[in-house]
Length: 297
Ligand code: SF4
Ligand code: SF4
Image 1 (cartoon, rainbow, N blue to C red):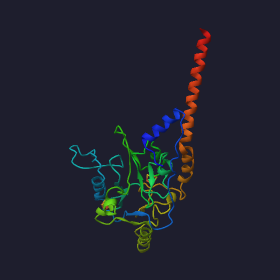
Image 2 (cartoon, rainbow, N blue to C red; image 1 turned 60 degrees about the vertical axis):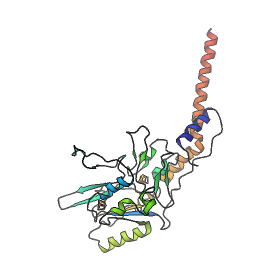
Image 3 (spheres, rainbow, N blue to C red; image 1 turned 90 degrees about the vertical axis):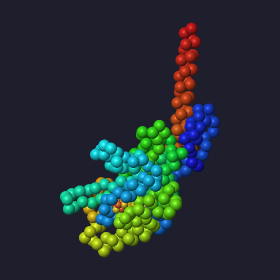
Image 4 (cartoon, helix red, strand yellow; image 1 turned 45 degrees about the vertical axis):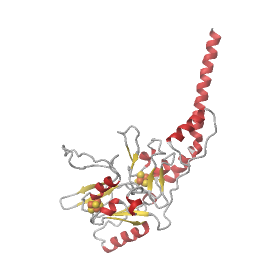
């Protein structure tokens, strides 16, 4: 059962009154890859020309504000420098020398066992059956556990807003994907550096590129296995560490944290029990003080 902010407050209120507790928040539906039905993106850094059409189109399609660059005093350009509350995807430049450089696209990896989903106590972060990890702002209670849990430092918080939301790529689930069956970035990319499709097919394409051009590619498909695999997979011509991808173990720590997190919050029993205990202690202390005052008078 999903819970909204209002439900959350109602439950706390009900606890204060000693009333019944509703059923548990569902455990996440995070899963491992067993078939070819997951939608994915393959980004090939060796093909990307750094035009940033993907960044601009993402903002247009998903109604995100532009960012003023430090160099742009007249605010003529949209110049995000990093992922933030208005930027779901970004292109960064890695440069070793004038001859040796590479572009890299960053966005949510859409992990198979997403830590953000596991950490979220109210299931505001969810993984769809088709592989997309998305966010429900109406359920979110603003705890920001997802920010801490993500091994890629992806989710961002709208610190500047009175009622903030989490911002991250949702593969255009409610916009371009819903209307056209493809992410906006993949649709607009002029060099096909971003391919959109079923994960199994994209893995085959990536393996074939490495096999056909072993001199061009690092022999590693990033996202194939890291923390249980991801729906965004990468090819590159330079070491992934240099492109600021972390070295991560293959098994996901998310499964463990999910069990702990969702057991603690199951039915809100633990928070409600804690709240009830605090109320009891406060009531008892107040009563003791009152009794002491009466004895003195
Ligand atoms: S990259 Fe981070 S935000 Fe995206 S699914 Fe994985 S854990 Fe969640
Ligand atoms: S649109 Fe394609 S080529 Fe242009 S920056 Fe994005 S990924 Fe690279």
